[in-house]
Image (cartoon, rainbow, N blue to C red; front, side, top):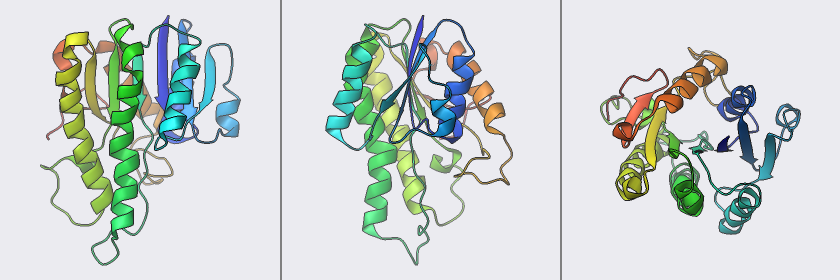
Length: 228
C-alpha cells in the first residue's frame, strides 16, 4: 500500500492529486487542508482521510502527524502542495507583511512539515518528498519584475529542497522540487495552458518514476529538467 500525505487539498492541484491517487486501488491518502470543500469531502472514504492542517501552526502540524501515525507506521510520499500567491506584490505595493506571510506558507511550512513527518518517511517504502515549486522560482527565468513574494518564496523552496536532499540521503528519502506548469486553477487563472488533470497526470508519472539519482533535482510536470 502506498501511503501519501498531500497538503492544500481542498481545491486546485491538491484536490486533483487526491482525485487521481484515489483512482488507484492500493493507497492510503491523507488529504490535509485548513477547511475541506464539497469536492474533497465527496472523495472521503476508507482510503481517503481528510485531516485538518494549518501549515503555519506548529500544534496543527503535530496533530496532523499524530493522526497519520495512528493509522499507518510509515509514509511513502509527502507532497508539500499548499501555497499562496496574494495580490499586492508589485514594487509600488509590496510590504514586509506580504513578504513574510508568503514566505511562511510557501517556504517555511514545507520544511517544517518534512521535519515533522521525517520519522514516518524513514519507515516508508522508497520514500519521497515532493515540494511543489514553480517556474517563477527559477533565477534563470527571472527576466521580469513584480511577484516579489511568490517568486522569492519558490526560489527559497528550491534551495530548501536541495538541502533536504542532502540531509535525507542517508535515510533513503528522495526529495524533489517540482514545477506543476501553468495550471487552470484559482491561482493560475483560466488563461493557463494546462488543466489540473493534465498537470497532475504528469506529476504522478514523475513521482512514480523517481529514483535516488533524481534527489535534489528541479523537474517540470512532464519530467523534463527545469533551469535553476
